[in-house]
Length: 170
Image (cartoon, rainbow, N blue to C red):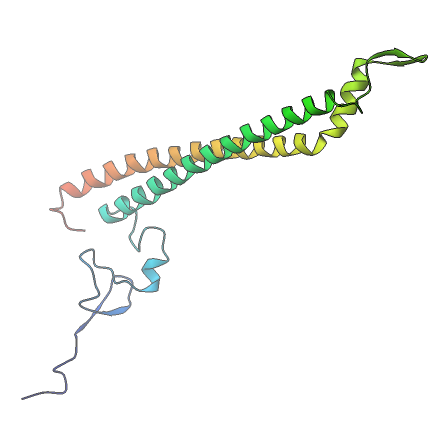
């Protein structure tokens, strides 16, 4: 005999106040609703063991991304520096480059030659400076994420210790 509720799945109230099907609520008491997917720590309070663990995972992933970004920025900086130096050599050795010395009564100094070459390679110089600034920014970001991860590790240890005495209830 079939009842109207035979195929119904009971709904429970999730920790976020959202009613979710019982089979949607996970072991950590949170459903897969948009409320939880959008939060930084998967809907957990970072002062609880699952939240502290989620924060560690989030920061660990951010640290790895920052490492990759720094490696790419370093490579780009080296490439830009090499391109600038190659352009400098090319212009210094070109027939168009003025020579230092006195020719036909006109004195050309080394500083004037360097200024002329500097004008020719200004695009490469700009690219190098921007690449250097990006690498420095990537280094700073990696440092900040590393410090955040270190702080979160301390918090996680503290949270874990405080929950040890509660019998694992959170």
